[in-house]
Amino acid sequence: MNLLDMKKRSLVFATNNKHKLAEAREILGERYEIVSLEELGHEGEIPEEQDTLEGNALQKARHVHERFGTACFADDTGLEIAALGNEPGVRSARYAGERCDPAANMQKVLRLMRGVTRREARFRCVIALILEGKEHLFEGITEGEILEAEEGQGGFGYDPIFRPTGHDLSFADMPPSLKNAISHRGEAVRALERFLNQ
Ligand code: IMP
Image (tube, rainbow, N blue to C red; front, top):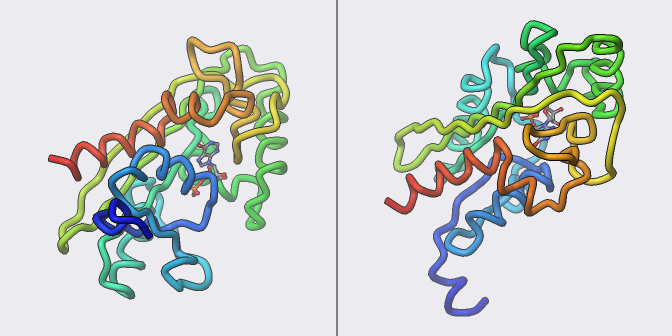
């Protein structure tokens, strides 16, 4: 560990999703050591049983804070598709069943959207931070549309079927740094960063 690393504040990100960790570290990593659940020694799933993104993000952050007493944040993200009444929303992870299978989730969306001309959708990400015993919420939104078929090999989750407004590429086709620069999670993490740095 060099001198710079020793000065970094450590902050737990209550996730084991390596894509989410990479996205958060790209933004916060210079000043903060972002610790994953695995690195913290937390085993098993964290409950997310609420019916809002805010509720789930808070539930995840509280779960970790209560067990480890450490400063931590958690995110919850939903894909809100206008033509489906903003579904899958908070049910995005389990849209096609309890297995949380991203391929099955995407296939379900593509099937429901077959022949639908109104294709606008948005990703909404909520981050809950618990710092010095206080709770704070941050939000990021990316507007875009649902593609007719999967495009691209990168990213994760619903990235291959989502194209952000003003871009020719799906999230899965973009270099990770571009996705992070315009994405819902990028925006929410930058809001978190501004709060931490103030
Ligand atoms: P959660 O926030 O991990 O509960 O994610 C809810 C669902 O949205 C899961 O199916 C994730 O794979 C998906 N998801 C979360 N963030 C993103 C993203 O940035 N792009 C695409 N899918 C995402």
